[in-house]
Length: 226
Image (cartoon, rainbow, N blue to C red; front, side, top):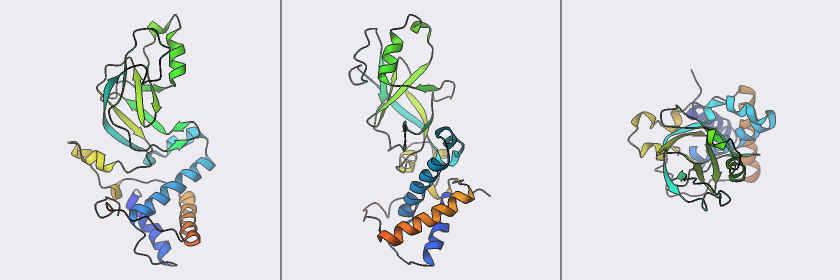
């Protein structure tokens, strides 16, 4: 049976109970520490491409709405051709960062038929100046200040699969897609045993040595992880 988020929290809580009973150590707070050290250890032990094998760390938002914007907002003022741009309508939940930017596994059309390629505004601007650009059928995107930008697409929305620092479940459950509204505790959390043993010890050490407690939050009683 797959290890779930709930299992991982229970495992850490059981370790803590042996040395510290504290009602203020919420599930939400413990999970934030688990994720913090999971990413730290994966980054220590693996090259950037290896993180993509930890599929349970990634979550998918199945429908992110796009709106049209101008080239100034898209940071492509150097483009002289008739290029159009779209960006995510709302700011995304906070994405986990790696050395080279946010950890995004895939951005696709809603039917998965086309996948976007990561780039930067300056690189895309240079591409448009090439003689063969008109034959380029790739879909490109870049990330700026919590938004994703897309040049020359007609998509109204995208699918996004990434590692998030924020809980995205309220966003999923606010849609009509009941099949994606899954309790956070029931989601898979497949971390290798040798890493999870270290995670337990690192979480325990942080709590005991710093006396850290989660900040009071008015929404804790409403949060899926509480």
